Length: 105
Image 1 (cartoon, rainbow, N blue to C red):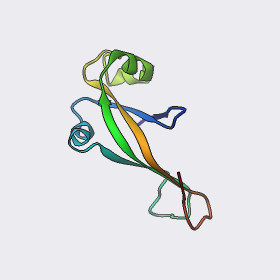
Image 2: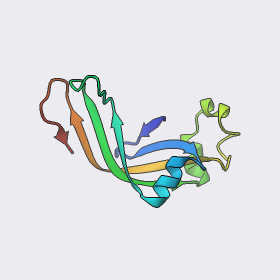
Image 3: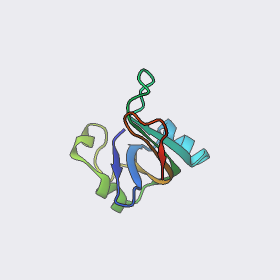
Image 4: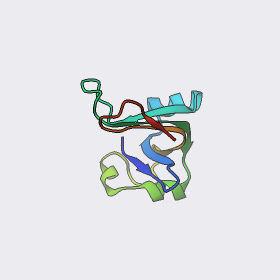
């Protein structure tokens, strides 16, 4: 999944409208992202993000997030099967290399 971060730390991702994750978000908008977590090596840095997600289908947002690489999956930014998931973080946790406690924002 490609994740774009906005200046306010809002996360934008794209996916298929009929995907399992879209169905799950419609049932429960509370989500969690883990970046860099490696169960084989817990000493590595990682970021956890908890937040509230919503499915966006408006043309402006879809065009804003569109990348030419997506053409292999969608007909274009106006493809009804292409949607954007907007996640507003409620908690961000960062574990630095060698740290014993994460920083929480």
